[in-house]
Length: 92
Image 1 (cartoon, rainbow, N blue to C red):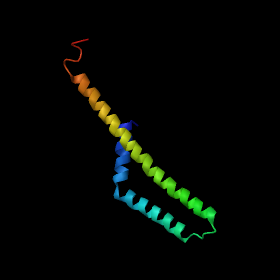
Image 2: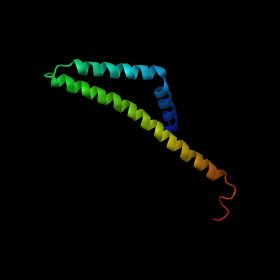
Image 3: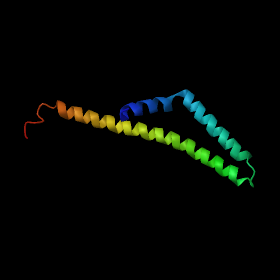
Image 4: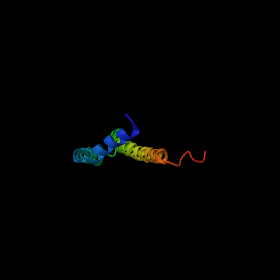
């Protein structure tokens, strides 16, 4: 899969209302469990904090794919413009 294809698929997922709802639901459930966690239960609290961080990392990873795809698409467009230029080999 090319970076552009990967970016398009990642963007479609990130923009999907179903994904947004699922992400918000999972995040809300984790935060709710953190709030209900006893102050003495540091192990559970730390595990929940890791879950929250991992959830955020998944979203950030997909956003990075989208941005890499934008860069790749820009580079491809510039390359196409350069190859279409009728004067590109004139001065070489």
